Image (cartoon, rainbow, N blue to C red; front, top):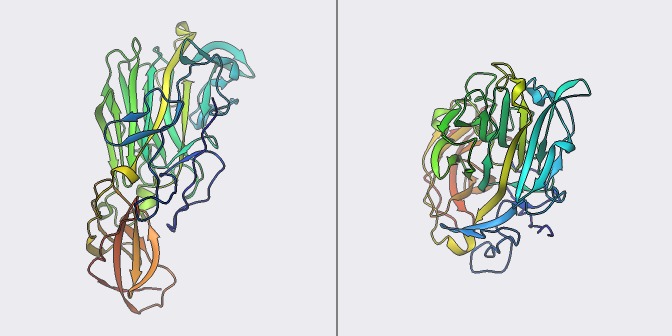
Length: 389
């Protein structure tokens, strides 16, 4: 089944990063349509068994694992014994990955290999499929046993804001075998991460996580990440500049860039191995029925102009201001910032740091919201702002 290539929409936002040759699931394809920026209605990805979901969601990419081997146009197989940055005990090998009977199987084994006493598997979609906003799903049956650490998660394609954790990590589902029948969701950023003890993982009970397949998913929109297990919300992380006035938005919420999907089964490590490893559990297998990625069909669904940004205020951070997030029927993609009535730049979230202006000069700043089809709000009321060198 051939991979469908999606056009990468060029973003004018100051914080956006360069494109890649792989499918980039960030917006609709361009066309001469009836919406201001010319986005065309989405066409469902031909390889997805469920092409649309209620609410305007359209399949953009999928792997139903219907063949007899892993599709290397969609996945990379990682081969290393690096420990995953978490002191994990396994060596990742291609031999521990199989596709059969409609599922992906990642199997961990107790076997000596290149200095490690365990082997397992880890795959990712880096440079083959990336996502910026959308809905990401996997239906999975998880392995039990003390020492296992299964994960369905995402990492940034490019470290636009720096190395981990500055550019972010999204943990859609993690499962540690010593604490059965419950999954965890989390995110890591510069100021919210496990090293600082500020990550705040949330556990969701899933009573038959090891016996049955369950659906784990994320819905990601500008400034908001929400995680679900079998359709029930159990985790949410959003950006509120008023609660983080001393840092740039990316320190709290760097999730405005492209991310790729990772599936792996680790053994041991700082979390999975915190109570040791039970060697009687091997071999053990993580099964994945499918992975699907959906995008909102903005060109078809979006009808309204965004609301006018309000409550512009100076932040504690130097030369920075923020405002209340605008509303829109299908979301605000970015904000246009104006200084003394002249357009300056786009920003992705509701905070802006000014640079390159004249010190000690007073400026009038305004903002307008822009949605995913290019509809704009009116300009906000002005904020008087003195630029500091």
